[in-house]
Image (cartoon, rainbow, N blue to C red; front, side, top):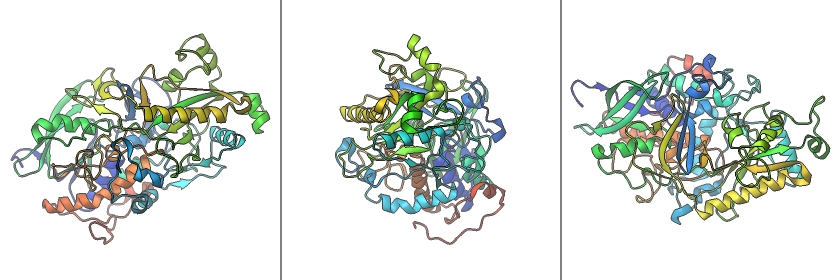
Length: 552
């Protein structure tokens, strides 16, 4: 290490699921851990219910428009956990045997649903994940379930990381939960990491890495202005023996691409095989009389439904097509989803419109009925078509506005496999919701921002084949010992369900290997801390370590 440089033992880039989980376990094991987070650090009382510039809505999101694909992600301490809808299903068993575009098993042979289940268990304990009952679901979820039943399909309440006793059904979950009902990382892993001495630095955006003479890493960062993210307030360097990259699937590969000139050649798969988790949205405009007559819905006075905005995120999904006996690219989930006004109202199209219909007089008419909308979220099996071009000079994208919006170098051209899967899921949503005239349905437009995802994956994926995977099955970057990737970019491909629980389980699974690598580099660290148990974990000054051999 350099004589005058700032030093830490483990440097974690990003504080979302992959970063927070790694930081907690390594700090609890005795390592000196520093977390660099490009976004701000907001308390629960700072999460606002508006769309004003400078409010939580613009400060904690990162919306990057690419060529054919746009990515919406978190930009704050807590990362994607602060802006997610807390839906936490496990990936179906067939996912781990997918072949995708490479024609052979994408996942490492050491990972299957069976081998990942114990790690799922651990995350579910940490985040208090529980399946909702029918009495917990939103009005929109109930409508979707009733429509599925009417059309001969099944539906299920989703498992979620939500304290229903605290939830007020305000449907502002994407702007952060001011009621501490959503189990974001701000109430479990991160306070537990802090209790064990980890340091978290917000508004620190990592630019690139280089090697030190002793085999460690020197990490270069810019300090970002808290009001205008286009402005930097200086820069710095910190050296570490271990680096954990968890900046998100839209940023981790960009950091590595920018570092290639100093670190040496990157694995071929860095910045390739990006997946948008096969995501697609349809908006239905519900006929309120049909909702009453066909489905027997009744809310007393007023319309039978008229409650698109009441409730929380997704609460009900149809998993009829998550059948491992079906051919690849024909399996998908259909999930009721509340997408707040703004992007959702812009991209929604007029049902049965001809040509682009996301604007114009007919669009104004359906906007008047927005409380009677129902949005359905499809997650199909895509072909990992995304490729990142040359990285921008700084950051993960060229910042266009003061906050929120950027232009990125991701190129995405969907293959016929992906297009066919989207078409099949669109057709089923239409068949279910237009049954007997219940609603009129139209997919969101791709004309404005291309395809879109809130769950970017696979841009530095793990696998057994060095040519098609950037990481080995221990999450270590090929050819660069001591660099680990634990965010969504490590997931090999689309999961057909919400990915937060799988990303978290893979991060938990990666920790023993990171600890082992740290030990080999002279860091006095052990593995075996218990799962943090909700908000009380942050109040403990020392959690007892349970004896557990490294690697179990």
